[in-house]
Length: 279
Image (cartoon, rainbow, N blue to C red; front, top):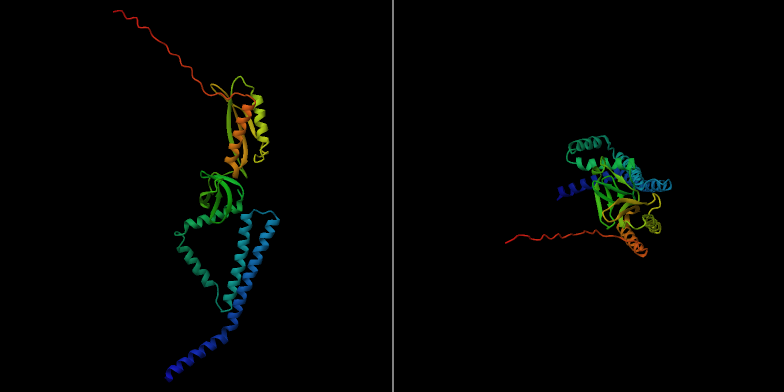
């Protein structure tokens, strides 16, 4: 019984000695981490506000804010560890060894992050732009270090790993996407009148861009019609909706103007042969 009490007394003495020797260090380390967290949060907000004021791309702004926040937190952790007499050198060496050993295992994610950094810094596209890459089209919703997120007109969200974007042929048409269509009129009709009508229809639709201006003209001469082509730039988010509305408006306008829209016709001749065979 006396041995147990002696051991308990030694444990209590050890704990008291620990708190006496290290309580101020622990308290100081906690205070440093709390202050570092709030400073990092404040710096993050300041960078975002400054970038917004300077009209910096939102993806680049978030990246710069993240870098500033991470830097402040890293310094806070290093200072807090120093309160316990812990140096950062062994941790750096250990992280280096771990990174070297796991390079092959995380090669894919690392390549995505490298490609994401290249996209953010090069700013070949930004949030809100319409891009087409590796056969996928959509409006850029978000750009992170790992991936780029697109959203189609149907509301489908497409996530593309950044390594599949860098090095590929990229089409960026800002907020618009080109629509190409055509209509055929009879050879007896006035093509200039039809072109003027289509010009008026496109000019009256607000979702169609004025710059670049729509392009309308005779595309080809068919077997039974003069084919008039019209190209215009519609908002990507309303691409299909706008193209349907334009085609309907063109059809109604041509009918109201009594401009014939011919359909393919074939002339069939039946030649009968008289059997002159004599019996």
